[in-house]
Length: 446
Ligand code: IDC
Image (cartoon, rainbow, N blue to C red):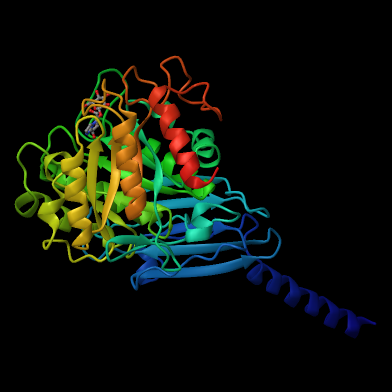
């Protein structure tokens, strides 16, 4: 019947038009054009995530658009964050595509970046690194750490002791930064954390450069290391390894830039801990130089990460923690670094530590060696044990220098051992490595 046919044809047209309007693009991505509404127009970052992942709300300056693609079971989220303070002549448009996941494994992420000229605001990128740790890992159990009095406490307010290995300089020994190495440290050594030491201004020739000689290379090694730690559910200290020169304020601008980038990318992750300056030295003092430097960098980090633990180095190669008593930063989640090398720094420094802790100062030993302060010679089990017992008594965390096979006493690995494939057990370990593994295992109840 012609009348009915006309109605049917009309109905089909309406349905077809509705499908064209309503069905999202098959690739599940949002394309953001330059001339889109105010907040999005200046900058855009597009992220495709798994349904389980929920983008945590950003600052008030972030606008988020979310669509659901039924076909691919993915959620597309466009996030634009406009920094009101920064002024730039370029805008970066970043597209992050994350394959959908059904398991708890980290999704594969690809990132493409294009530069769009002529905008006056800069974009901040928010990659989703805040996936909750699953399984029985240190971070899934203890979550976001904070400072309470002289202690670090976990998400339940229970005192928590960080224990782990420090890498050597990641620019120098990048091979040590592998997920399998960190897994062995977690499962066979009983570590709940690692420290990534990134030298700032010391280069050793060849491609093995410090941060300022090759920012991109060092940044990549560090962020790979952070990703492994997040995947494994362990804590990770990002160490701005100030040593030569000893004045951290020489590179305040670079430190702020580096930590802001890390904090933007990982600020939502409970794993991350920022160490602002390894060992100030060369006569710089706490109140005149180190504290103002730490305050400035802390302010920068807090723009993007409101609660992570921040570690401030102290004067004289991070030994002068007593200078900080009564003159701490106002930031409540800040702790102060004490470093020792067991054959050089003995009773007198332990007494200092006890006094400072009695005064309520929160201290973290982000680096210690079992030997001389030179890192070579003087392996001393008795003094190392004295130190570690005291730190255990006080629930103060510690990180051993270093996860390396360099020919020096402090190295935990034999020179002949492969740096990239740490095996469970003692076969690859130096004298120091065996002692440390054994001590850490016992402490972790392994
Ligand atoms: C040492 C390394 C050594 C390297 C040297 C470079 O062990 O291989 O040649 O740095 O300057 C620290 C520092 C740490 C030192 C370590 C041992 O934080 O960078 O590493 N140490 O000297 N403070 C006290 C000792």
